[in-house]
Amino acid sequence: MTSGPVAGPRSRRTVDVPELVEQAAGGGPAAARAVGRLISLVEDASPALRQVMELLAPRAGHARVVGLTGSPGVGKSTSTSALVSAYRRRGMRVGVLAVDPSSPFSGGALLGDRVRMQDHATDDGVFIRSMASRGHLGGLSWATPQALRVLSAAGCDVVLIETVGVGQAEVEIASLADTTIVLLAPGMGDGIQAAKAGILEVADLFVVNKADRDGADQVVRDLRYMQSLGQQSPSQAKVEGKWVAPIVKTVAARGEGADDVVDQIEKHGEWLASTGTLEVRRRRRAADEVEAIALTTLRARMGDLRGGDILDRLAARVVAGEVDPYTAADELAGAVTA
Ligand SMILES: Nc1nc2c(ncn2[C@@H]2O[C@H](COP(=O)(O)OP(=O)(O)O)[C@@H](O)[C@H]2O)c(=O)[nH]1
Ligand SMILES: [Mg+2]
Image (cartoon, rainbow, N blue to C red):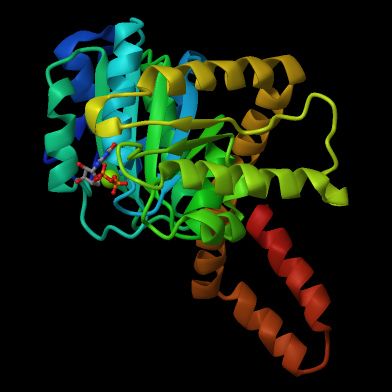
């Protein structure tokens, strides 16, 4: 299935996938439109996706994936926008994915985020997309890696993923990103509680935003203290070459500290590459993706079987005592993977 138009559920027209892929990699305003349409196909779980992914595979690109997570209101969108500016000053191409796992509506853009991102709206070197992961089993694990492939193939040097930190989302973003940034801010009850919630494990970099407000230094001290406890515990004994997440103070609303954050992301990138951790993380990510797709396929085929008579016949034989349920399940699994 490498050529020919495929109907996408959202578009009234058929989709010329090879042309879209060419356009996405080509740059300019046409690229931005093509990237948008390709990511829509991802969100819709379009049947055209198989062909899209086939064509994107050899263009995998080299985008660094940076996740930003933290409580609502901590300044993730503002920081993302400031980071985009900092990367653009360095001449890098940037993709932004704002992922709201709970957003029920398509293109899940929050108006405020749109406004904040307007500075970059006319910049050909920036691709911005909000997406909701509704409709996908496994949420982020399914749709986001595919959107990342699209942005990577479009030549992005870095992709920033913003997601609300609500329990599971932090862990999910950490499994997706090369570098995970956990944002905190004074006066949000974030300090020790947040550290307890497992952010110490997922953070490669801490950003204490709203440093223009009282209490930022206290948040930094709390974090340092939590880190020191972690290093003393036997399970996290300080291994040589272990990465200790740096803490950077920012005033995202004024763009202050964004360059420091980019510098630290670069440092972490060098550490990832030199220790082989980058390859480990990327393979784990690809494994999760393949597993999610395979499970979806298997579930669909199981559904087909339920409609057919194989399961009925097996069930009748189990009831009659002719076969035990494990053997019956083996037979069913065999039929699914045949
Ligand atoms: N005082 C101050 N306010 C900020 C700063 N950064 C962001 N804000 C404000 O905090 C609010 C939430 O920011 P937003 O980026 O939407 O947070 P998000 O929910 O984490 O994406 C907005 O009103 C921002 O203007 C900062 O550095 N200092
Ligand atoms: Mg936001």
